[in-house]
Length: 464
Ligand code: URP
Ligand code: ZN
Ligand code: ZN
Ligand code: ZN
Image (cartoon, rainbow, N blue to C red; front, side, top):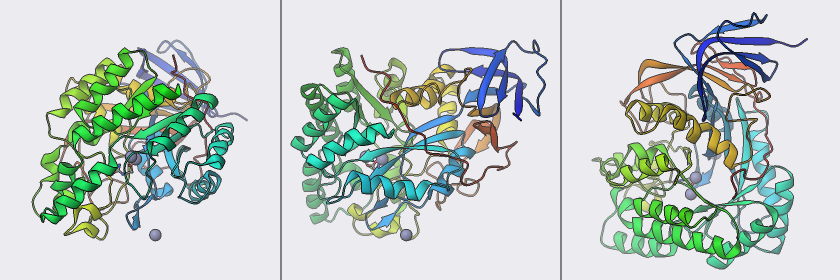
């Protein structure tokens, strides 16, 4: 017996259209759209979306649930993190499985499957962090692509941990050029940064704000440029993660003007926060330590412009929460020991809606950068990221007029602070369906761990 849900009276917004329409869902999929009131579909459940937006569930293509980092691990598990994602209107996450040095990709991927399986409230997929490029690893990349893990992150930062040198990067890119994989790059010159870290600490500059000073915008731009040229030499596409510096956006824009398959992602923290937060008194700045770092406020205009002109295609969160108490505090007296990362998986859709309210982007661009583009970039479209017959019924009923104040007191992420504490935003998630099942129902959690399943991906759907 199939189950039918009808969503009536809402404004359906996708990356390409805004139409008043009723939506019919049969079991886990969208079955039809029709003019409001034109169809007398029978249904087990009818959702009245009058005055609401009906939007695709968000696709957050950059999360780190339970990531081991700096002697601790990110405080959200797949269970708490995907529940918080659902509360924030995100119905798919793409998390990063980690290959540790001396281990295979297979070992890393199996470990991440074990962490996630049976625990997720919404669907999930994986990228693979490649920390150890060798013949075996390169062959394994082909196998992972067949299993739906089609993108690989490398690091030009963090020497001794995740770092790859230019030769290792070139080799992985050459493999990706042949097998259709997408290389994702953490573009910061980590070797130079480590020298500046050492010099800053020797001068007694130990506060969180120095994290932002040593991880210079120029060293992000330089690494971005180098990654672009290595990818060009290899004939491979490139996706630069967590872009924060205006100078790095300029490198991406130039490469795209040259016709290269180069893509960029930024994150809400770079759009809404700045070095002012890193400089908050006491040790408060530690809450805002992430890499790439927050930049002076002047960089934000270039990021917004890049999002409008499509020089940046995706906004993901890089959700990597560490509690202030006991985790961020590991770096008291030495900023380099503060675990890197910010919470945000629950906040992204709302912050980007606020960007619509503020006039930075249009409503359709909101859906594009938060849903459709990440789905296309990582081979999930149109199953995810849009509202069309045949797509998974991952749908958010969004109240564009509700006011809310972001706070750790009310969020659902397993972290003891909010990066946006006290921020007022207009717009709020009301109901969330994941494959047709309500996960959030009129602001009550009705989901369950284990509803979310691993979702294999095809290769990037954006290549020239
Ligand atoms: O500070 C960050 N971004 N932490 C997560 C790891 C990474 O580099 O994405
Ligand atoms: Zn633990
Ligand atoms: Zn990174
Ligand atoms: Zn990350």
